[in-house]
Length: 118
Image 1: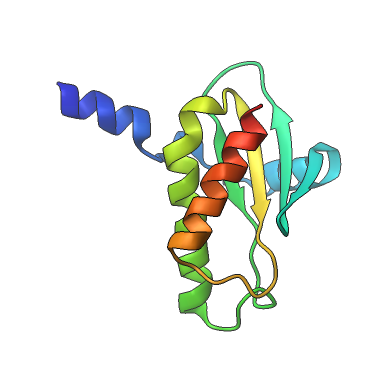
Image 2: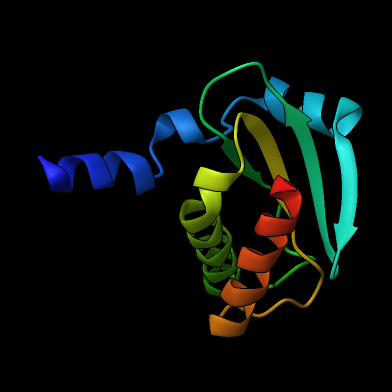
């Protein structure tokens, strides 16, 4: 039982992801834009539900797909670890150009998500 509740609390299932094009466009058009440490966050509060994450990354950010996927993994992991403090909001993240995945990126993103929650 305890393991299931932890998985549900800290998981990143489909209900915690922005998947529809309309949601991305709404956040880009109407969301609050915040630039922090080169990362651009588009946020929008919702009335209820878990926080949801979307990621915008292109070949301009990293030419190699393996690097882009590593960046996305870091963003998802930081969101997963800090989601409890975010409340009901949608967050769209665009990393800076030339970002490199790794422990430093993960630590920085965790701090940025904590700042967003304030």
